[in-house]
Structure formats: C-alpha cells, structure tokens
Image (cartoon, rainbow, N blue to C red; front, side):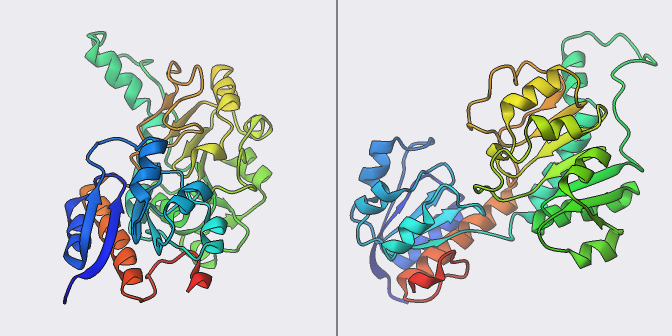
Length: 326
C-alpha cells in the first residue's frame, strides 16, 4: 500500500513497533528526540502543521495546542486515560481523540496486587533494612505486617481493571465489596462481590483499591473524611489517577496512624510528591509503572498507531473517544 502524504509528530519515543507502523504508513514522521516530556514551547512548535499527533498522558493538550495544530485530524493518546486532553475543545475544532483501552488491564491489575502485597507485608521497608546491613537474624516481632488471605477487599470502580483486580482475589479467599454507579453482575457471580455505598466499603474493607476515571466527580474522591472512615489496620491502593486522592490528607492519615499503609502508583501533582510523602515508611511509591511491561507498552504503541493511521486513511479509529467529529 502506498504511503499516505501526511505529516505526523510523536511527542516522545514509544516502543519501536508503534513507530514502525506509523513510518510505514505515512510520508513524514518526526519523533521527539529527547527522553523527556516536551516543554510547552516545544510542544506547541512540534504540533504545528501536523496532520496527526501521537501524544502521551504527560502532554497537556488544550485549546492553545489544538489551535497551534490547526488542520490536525487526530490526537492519538498513548494511554487508556485522556484527561490530559480537552476533548470538548478538540471536538469543537473537529479533531478526533483516541485512547488505548483494554490492552493494559492485566498489567495494571497485576501491579495493583504488587502494591497491595508490598504495602501489607512491608516488603520495601524490609528490603531497605536488609540492604543497610541491619538484618542480624530472624526475630518474632520483625516487620510484622497485615494479613491478606481471608480479609475484605474493597473495589472503588468496578470497570475493566477493578474487575480484574477483584477476580485475582479468589486465590486469597477474600470477601469482595465494590462501589460503582453500575451493577457488575459478572463480578458478583464470579466472587460473590457485594455492591455497597462508598462509606460502607471504606468502613468494612481491609484493603481499598481505587479504579475510577478522573473527572470533576472523582477529584479528591478520597479525602480526610473518607480516610477517617477506614479501619486503622486498612491499606489504601491507587493505580488509577493521582488526583482521585487528596494527597495532603493521605500524608496526615499515614502519619497519624489513621490507616496502616498505602500503595500509590500515581500522584496528585505527578511527578512531584506532596511534602512528607516520600519520608513515610508505610507507603509504597513506584514511579507510575501500571502498564510497564514490554508486552503491554508495545500493544499500547501499536494500538495508538492504528488509531492514528486509521483516521488518516479516512476510516474510524478503533478507539475514538469523540466519534461525533466523524
């Protein structure tokens, strides 16, 4: 198939198969040569005159960027979330927006359990203790953590990832509670999950795992009041979006022993952390690794590329967010 006469910008290097899909399909492709997020000025200049842009969750795509990219047909986001893009502004300008759902469900669910188990069993603390040469032999009171098997798991947001996390609890014989706008009958049948109010879930769960999209209704969904409802022996896990949790309130809750611990893969002002968070021993804080497996990131790259190329060919992208622009 002949190459499309099109000019594409990729805002940061992604796994090579995705770049290859685009370069094989279009006549010109430029990739950000720096392994970092573009500055605002670099982003504005980079999108100018492009027919399509493959962007990342770390790129803020607002009206100014969309205007700089006048004539652009699609911003293909390399992420399942797209709160970095002003979709309403894009739609008003006739620009398609796409994302990469589905392919990162298992990787993110696995990472969620990694956070849960690491926080409960104090793995990071223990690892640092041993590396520092402080381990002088087994002790009956050394790094006692929380039990997992037979405990209650609370899922806030029972979509693809929340469901996948809940299903993994079967091996631990856990009671599962979930809070969602919609009933999840499949989850109820699979693990006997109970749909409850948010307050009930927080009050009864030993582990609270958050899996919601970020919008005006979920920003600071978990704040001081909600943390106060949790058991002092409970753990809070977040692999969704950082601003869903009031990070300042969480720091205070962890300092004051309101909850036992937390595992966070995302942060409110990412990559910055709220003051005091990094110094707390009872929180596990990897650098946003939810989808960070070779297979998953490669699938994300090829799906984003497929969305972009489909739009340039006059076809509907498989994962268009705003189909009304077509």
